[in-house]
Length: 114
Length: 113
Image: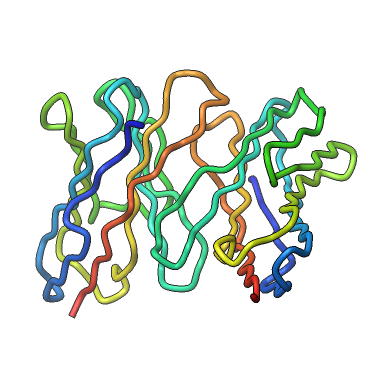
């Protein structure tokens, strides 16, 4: 069964540095998403992406964040000038075109900011 | 604004018991979709079930069943004959007119042998 893959599984970065989290969505999916989960808390929506542009974003997704689909397969989340509070699990997800299609999640990237 | 409430923070049951996880939601959208996801200790999010707002028929899938009641804005999830491998955090999620999922805070289910 096709799945969403995320790399790396764990990223450790010094505060102030930039990080890029990578995702390969399911190949025939049209919508792509990033969510984050701070340890022990609920999963929070960051951004959705469709037709090569951001379709929705949350208040969390400020100028520090950006997303890109640099080629036909990868979907990346860039965090500039990381802060301690950016430490979290970041999940990528993708879904098909119909509204009732579930979002399928990758295994996540654990980001640790030191 | 959308909201999902999972009032049960933690539940413990003994293996083979049935367990129901509660979910109450709020939305102003007339068409919406409800989902349950499982997050085992390894951390990934696994899709379990979905329900459309215009279909209130309740279903059973293997050991899973769900009870969707629009009148009370509830979407409860039942695991029959629980197993130790069912131990995980279970999240209820809502999708309205926007595609983003709004998650509840999760229920930690522990199934004891």
